Image (cartoon, rainbow over all chains, first blue to last red; front, side, top):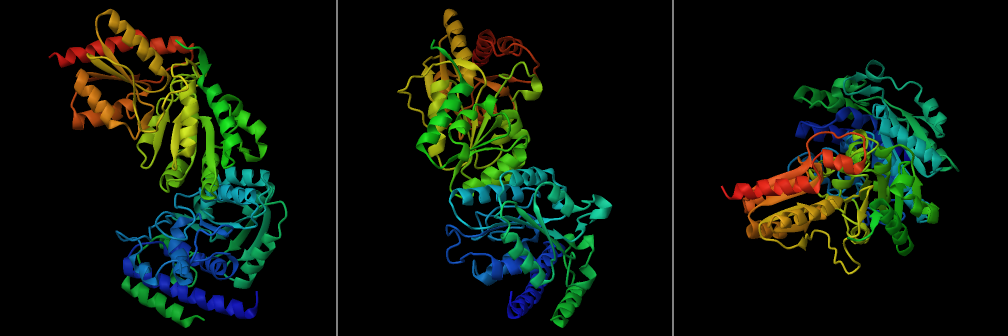
Length: 275
Length: 313
């Protein structure tokens, strides 16, 4: 990735963090913490890596992106609107009656959403099915699945991990948003996932580590994952929950708390000060 | 009475045959392919057969991915595991987005008799019926099984196909006009209507014979599509006979009986009785279990007489 591209994506993520705080403050519901930790990951995919066409969201042979940690969908929707999948005005209708933007991603309401998700642990198996379907159609498209680190506590993830290894789906790329915090506390407090890289390695996966807030680092990790010849890949992206808003960082309370007026001012000031 | 053919054998052969004619069919299995008979497809089409091991949650999740790619997945395991282990992705992924997935749950009712209550499915239709967008097809003989497999493969949307392990007499012939959503009158009668789904249809027909010996004329309906249910055939039959008994190898809560009661109570209130499970069964010979747990022709006959008695009050 060129330095120019990195700068462009950095600017976008700063703008998107601002948009996110604006939207969630306006609607007084939604999940800021996990949306902010995934900002660089989702933006790099949508503005550099994914082979997708907003004009033709069902195009054959396109890359697929599944937001398995569906609660981070505000950041997904902001990216999709900017790419032109639907009008930006729709963003303020998030979670409101009659909106196509549901509280968790809904494939039959929002154009470009590839899979409904939200109940955790479902996206990796579905992504595996997609990747196998692509292979049967002799397509060289990639299927990306963004997982939360709390999400891998779900047993279904490991069923899918075992199967992806059996079927050698090298074009299936999982990304772990490893922010260390879940709803009730840190993963260490609630349910540690231990050395998660070793676990996936022992399941036969190609494990790649990167800094999930460093766009060049994440971009390189994706490029490396795409080179895998037989194994499915998982990119373990080290992130910070609530990244970019100091009082949200690393705090489980900001998993899904409404943003109050003073908090809003402070968050906007911090995000305005960043570049 | 026609010759006996196991429903699972008829299913396995129908699926294999479908695979020859339709390249979009993919088959998923959770390590019971020898039991579900999906193995027949797997042997002929190994590239379209995915045995994912003992992981029903993942199997159902994966099937969604195939459906998004334009394939028609047939997903196989025991009915009880499909609808307990697989229920999360069934609801969240398949039903919510109306995915074109065919969930084929076998060993329904008490048919896995020797394995005991843990392997018998008496709640599967209740789970599935409560989920929006789902269609439920439940078959009674080998011909109906074959026709149902063809019909659901052509139907665009999620279907739960309920299959038995048991051998059942072949009642229908090849000219049988099977249509999803359409009930079938298999015997005309005036005094009571017996409404059955699945292989218990055969005991229901025997019950109608027993009633005839007592001078009671019973109409018998075969409701292969439990959801959406054929309201017209139910209402017409209730109006004609004035008493109804539902018969299903399933809990009386949430399955065929509930579905019929929902229609009739709103549109044609009619005295009803319910033949179905009210408790977990046990290990044993299949026919002995049917007898012990109230599914014998005599038990159905007695329920019919109770329903008739209520209309005379």
